Image 1 (cartoon, one colour):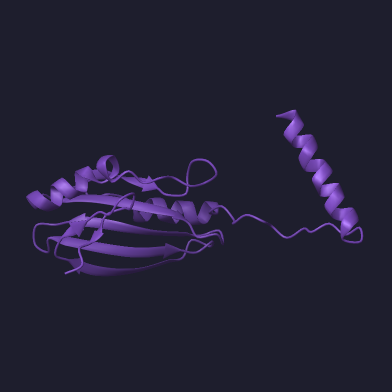
Image 2 (tube, one colour; image 1 turned 180 degrees about the vertical axis):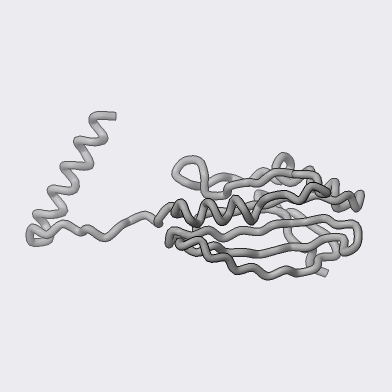
Length: 150
């Protein structure tokens, strides 16, 4: 680990010397969600008492902030609930790179079978969402569930 740190310092100094002595201070990675965005996201993802909680998957976790989505594990609960028309909720979300969050909530209800809610939370905690009715869900390899096309 120490060798990597020394190598990074050497590369930074080499970079500074090769561009006239100035060091690039622009961030090279996207911003993590702010505390306000995380709090608003947590409130939005609260599962109503009448729905089975199928969990939530954070798509921007893991190394180096990416997760390979496993539909066999992560979405089995909501897919089974949709097929049985049992009330349930499942969500997946991730950072938007500007301190906010984007995500999708899938709800299976008794009256309107499936609702997909796409949402975003800005860095200040402001929320915007849009609902879409969905006849059926499908999953593609390594992708979260989505409305079936056709």
